[in-house]
Image (cartoon, rainbow, N blue to C red; front, top):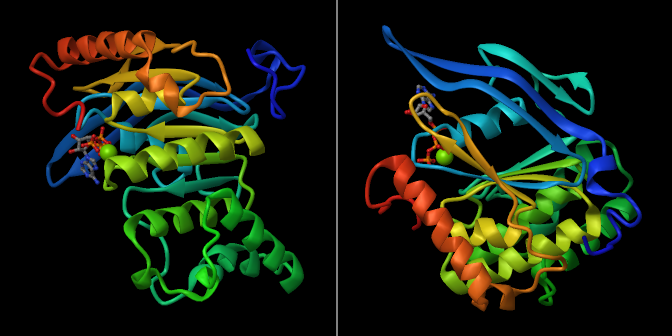
Length: 278
Ligand SMILES: Nc1ncnc2c1ncn2[C@@H]1O[C@H](COP(=O)(O)OP(=O)(O)OP(=O)(O)O)[C@@H](O)[C@H]1O
Ligand SMILES: [Mg+2]
C-alpha cells in the first residue's frame, strides 16, 4: 500500500477496529406487520478504512448506515465504536445524506461553524476551522462565506454539507448516496475531493452508493448487501494502489472490475440490473 499521512508505517492489519457490528438485526414494525430489514450483520471496520456499501434498492444500506450513526437502535445485536458499546448518535460520527442537511436560514460560514459554536469553541478557532474546511472541499470563491444556501448551486451546497460534517472533526464519516443527485462532472470532482479529504484526515468512512465506478474508485473494501432480509452477500477488495486519481477510471483493469461487479449485482437481484447503476 502507498504510504500516506494516515497510514505511514502502519500496515492495515495493525490498525485498530473502529466499528464492530455483532449479530445486528433490525426489524421495522409497520402497522400489524414486521419487516426484517437487516439480519445477523457481522462486520469489523478498521480505523481509517474506506468502506463502500452497494446492493439492490431496499436491501438495507441506509438502515445499516443509520444504525452505525446511532439514529436507529437495532432490534438485536451489539455495536462497538472504538471498543465501546454504542446505540446513540455522537460527535464522533457525522452523516452526509443525499439531500443536504444545511440550514437554509444560515449562511455558509454559520452552517459550517454551527456544531463548533454549540461546543463553545472560541470565535478565532471557529474562523480557522471554517477556512480550513472550505479549502478542503474546494470552496474558495470570494464572498462565499456570507452566501445563503439558496444562492448556491447543488454541487456547492453539497460541498458546504461536507464541510459542515468534517468541521466537528468526527472520527467516522457516514455518507448515504451523497452525490446521487449531482450531474456527472460535479460528482466526479466531489469523488476526487472526498479521496483527498480522506487522505488528509485519516477518517473512517462508510459510504453508500448505487454507482459502481464510484464504489471502485473510493473503496478499500466494497461490501455487497443482499435483500430479503438484508445481509452481507460478499466483500471485495478493489486493490487499486493509492493515491487514486481520476485517470484510474479509464484503465482496462478498472473497467473489467466494474463489469465483474455489475455481473455479481445482476445475479444477486435476478434481473437486468437496471436499478443497480444509475
Ligand atoms: N421507517 C421504516 N419503516 C418500515 N420499513 C422501513 C423503514 N425504513 C426502511 N424500511 C424498509 O426496510 C428495507 C430497507 O430499506 P433501506 O432504506 O435501508 O434500503 P436501501 O438499501 O437504502 O434502499 P435504496 O437503495 O433504495 O436507498 C426496505 O424494504 C424498506 O421498505
Ligand atoms: Mg438508501
